[in-house]
Image 1: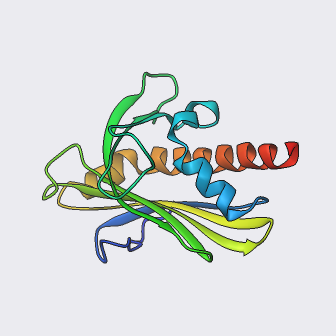
Image 2 (image 1 turned 90 degrees about the horizontal axis):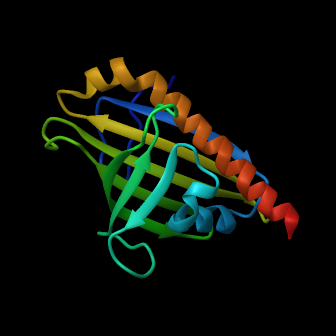
Length: 170
């Protein structure tokens, strides 16, 4: 499990990070489109089975998205409101960054990054991480770190399988 802090575009220091990554045999643009296609999360993700944006139109900085998160697949999901901090679509790298905290941010803050790096026209590297800080962050790591790591890996595996399947069907 990764615990060394990994910076986000908005936070350069914190307590810990959880990271999952993989190479996907599909163009980076297709993976990024899938991540931003909130209406279809339920068709491929068992971690975030629903994503509801509070406004119409494309995903932009400042939007609020309610993700239905399953840390334990045998239990109902919990709604997690996230604020979009960055939607970056560059040729060499694409990033989708959100922030959330069920508590005041001085107690616990969390930023989640999904980064897609161009490898070739038919392949990309996807990295998903959450970085946390605040006085309660050590408790989150202790009690939820392992399950977060497992669920992030599940998410990346499901994303890879879904996008690669769609790519080969075309």
